[in-house]
Amino acid sequence: MRSVISGSTFQKNSTTLVIMNDSQRASERNEQQVAVAVIHFKDLVLVGRRPPGRPWAGYLEFPGGRLQPGESWQEAAQREALEETGLSVTIEAHLLTVHADYDYGRLEIRFFSAVPAAESLPTPRAPFFWLDIARLLPEDFPPANAAVIAQLRQRLLSQR
Image (cartoon, rainbow, N blue to C red; front, side, top):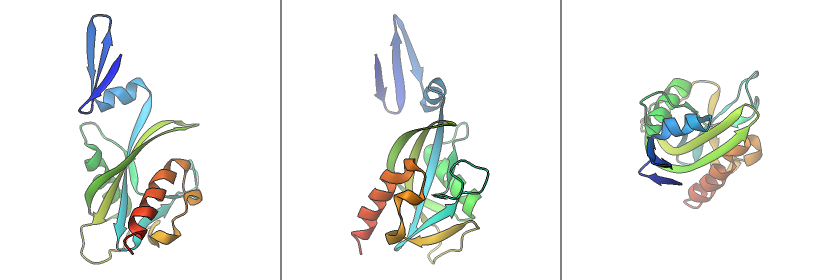
């Protein structure tokens, strides 16, 4: 029997109650935890092209990466945004969580809406660039991004 309560899993094995945090639960499932910052500014969203030699090379991506020990999901999204794009961001909200199975492993991906800390449009580090939200297409991204792209287009385009 398994119940999730406040981000912890309580697993009952016979008479033993095992309490696991998100990291332990991910290790048990051999799942990598990835935090992604979906950075937007007005009608633009920040994307980058995945480099050769990496899974999904040539596809677009949002800045993000694996959680480090002791780091919250939001902290990881902020850190990855800064490391990959050179931009400081403010996390607004959790958009959604996706579990994806790829040839190289299972991922738990949490997408967070974020805005640049700067008041004017900042210039990101290559390979990242600003793209009009209307031009976001699910087929340009790895499959795990489809739901967040649909949500983004619906939410942000409805504000136009």
